[in-house]
Image 1: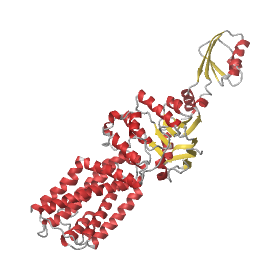
Image 2: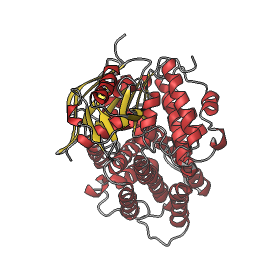
Image 3: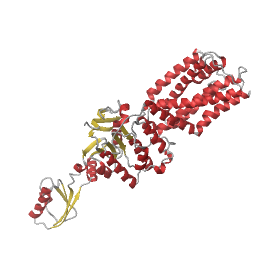
Image 4: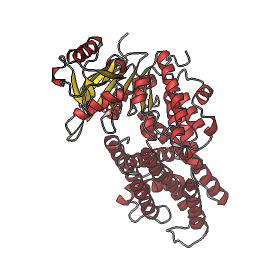
Amino acid sequence: MTFAPAPGRAPTTTILRHQTALEVRLILRRGETLVLNVLVPLAALLGVGLTDVIRLPDGDRLGFVVPGVIGLAVMSTAFTGQAINTGYERGYGVLKRLGGSALTRSGVLVAKTSAVLVVIVLQVALLVGVGVALGWRPRVDHLALALVLLLLATALFSSYALLLAGTLPAQATAGAGTLVYLVLLVAGGVMFPVPGADGIGGALPLAALTEGLRATLTEGVPPGWVNWTGLFIVGVGGALAATRWFRWE
Amino acid sequence: MSAAIDVRDLTVRYGDTLAVDGTTFELRHGEVLALLGPNGAGKTSIVEVCEGYRRASAGRVRVLGHDPYADHDRLTPRIGIMLQSGGVYPRVSAADMLGLFASFAAHPLPVDLLVDRLELAGFLHTPYIRLSGGERQRLAMALALVGRPEVVFLDEPTAGMDLRARHRTWELVRELRADGVAVLLTTHLLDEAERLADDVLIIDRGRVLASGSPEALTGMGGIGRLTLAATAGLPVAALPGGLTAVEEPAGNYQIDGALDTTALAEVLAWCLAHGAVVTGMRTESRTLEDVFLELTAKEPS
């Protein structure tokens, strides 16, 4: 009676732990991930932090660029990487198969978002480590608010990634994901100040994160309301749209 | 015990296209039901509704007593799904994928057992993208079984397999059945349906053309065709009721109809009545292929 039925679902935490661990391994194993998520932010950190090729508004170069590249790392992992990988997995029927397993469909989304969070924690640790080694001295008075910003931004970028991947063909997703990456790399307050960052400019997705992180970590003040509002409104929009339009195959 | 799968008047539409048109069937625990039909007949649509991937346009579908679409999450631990293709991360190995699916189950089958039974050992650590079609099929089947499900869906399970792997798979399906698992499989291979299924649904263009056990469909294993060699020019119109005959070439009669013992006696009596000399008589049992071709030929295109 080898195959006598004995069905049952493992505890949800066990299922999600295994699925998240596999997703993390897959992200870390990809060569292009290393370039996009580690080398580009590191190069930006070193280039802007240590040289004066780019003119900045004030003298604290590291205080400007470390929060910027943390934002870049969050976007590249939670948005671009997530969109491209999920798009191809959808094309290969992986999402369909996982959605029909005991993991369930919402389990797929939770595991995918948890996996990018784990990778972002590793990236942030690396960038902060390098920044501190170069002489960056962040303010930690509002560290908790900075972490909440990071979490919100991760959820925001991840929901737009899933929206793209769940509606467009894999190639189009990869193209759109890369295009948005390039636009925000320039216009997201990573290496250059965003025009109007203290006004409506600070509500734009990546700028809201980088400006908010600069407020907390560099100036030691809470993020501006425009940063919170931007992240919140754009984030809720993304989550609603992803829930509404995401298709599994 | 109630049926494992109960489908009543299922209709599936894609826009204006009618993919499944009023299908009804039942699959009991410990039985195998084969959906047999050409490509595009609607087999996969039926299976995907039962798996909970697709909503029925009309009709009532119950899998283990649940609506598979609305109660999808409640059913997934109890069913095993083998998709027609894909479903695995390209860069993940069979070992990792099987380990992952085993971790989802409360009482998984030992992975080693599946590796052995489905002969996965030779490519266990190779990324999925480098596996052959047959190897992918075997892995997909292992993934469907690892959670010890009550109902297993096999969509074209032996497509792309060589003969040996096909026979191993058939053995496995028989064993599932013997162990009490309900198996819904789709195939366009007549011998696969004939060998494995307790019940066969012959489907074409979304409609069920015939259903029943392979024996019932092929006429209780009786005679399907009678060929008679006798004197040329016998009056075929004078054959007893229900039987028809074609003389082609002269002296060679193809007799069709319900060829039970009475009919055979009547054919011989007809020869005797017309003073014919019978020089040969050949009988052939009908195969599922005969039934299938007859039914699908009748369909207006």
